[in-house]
Length: 464
Image 1 (tube, rainbow, N blue to C red):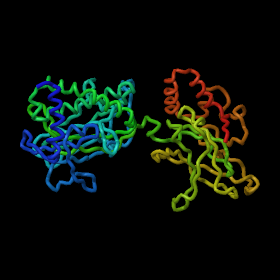
Image 2: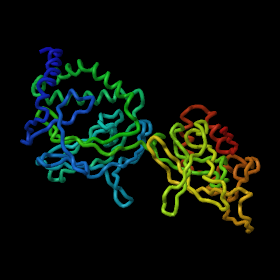
Image 3: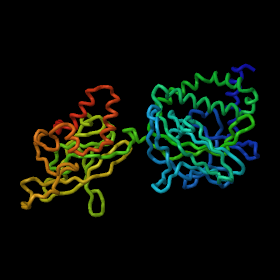
Image 4: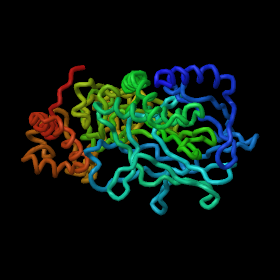
């Protein structure tokens, strides 16, 4: 039979023969009934359909005592996706959500209602409502060798539990996205062909010829998916199966997906953090110019939010700091003007909170305090000796208020050489180094000098 005839037969067989018995099963080598996996949108024509029911906890109902997978330990919600060039040396692996300083945990899954031996594997999928294979790689190191297949044999001896240690996520470069998706699609199709009794007997060479004829379709799908998949969100996919005598993959139950894992390195999904703010007090009329150092942010998706809480911790007022995309400097600093307080008729200082807000996903940073001062004409006249504890700055350097209009030339926090200025500001070295590293990647020396001048100067004029 020619390869083209086999392909035509296979396509017709899927549509005409498999559809009427979508929930059917077949015997495995160990006598257990096997069930087809739930197809992903890109592979809907390659497998049958199985629709389990779930409990409130997200676990498959065992009403019929069918095997099912249960996630014992979810992965952490945030993890750094690294490019291959960053994988040199030792890096932290994907840990479990319940990990503490006293106990390390890792993503763990359990196979329930199953007798005998089975294999549980872990794959990387998208975080969509209907997940499909992701373009990034899930890898582990084994004797300095990269491992892409993550399979663990489970049985009664280990309680049918699979704990996946040492996993890392490789952020694939743009030129490799289509190639990686195509590799995964080839594996999926080959498994489907081998599982088909009418085709598996043809031998590997004939199956490879069938695969070759399907390549144009797979390449088209990979190209489309590469442009749509979110590069900063993934899920772990766990599948349980047994292998047949010819290497066939017989799934014993429905696959299951972990909670979403977000890329902590990305400005779109990373943790928001205010590292330093040059002043933490201002006039109740607003428009005071402030600049802050932050962890990496996206200039198109960031806000500086002011808010006030009452005695019951309920929000009673909020407003947004004023700035434009041009005031976000190299993703690590923001220059903004304070919003006016809800009323300028105050006679005593009012303490509010300020935080970073990412509108797209609602993520927030830890809030810090900010004090609104009354207008000078309304302020109570209270005479007291100046104290060394008086400060309007969150920096650990010189403790004094900078009056409005005071320039960098006569500000002890900003004068002197670059080295002494950095020391007096007591900037967090990890943040500065991270910013310098990212800026250096632009290969433009002027960018580095520009950022240095930004840090050393307080003259950030913004037009509102």
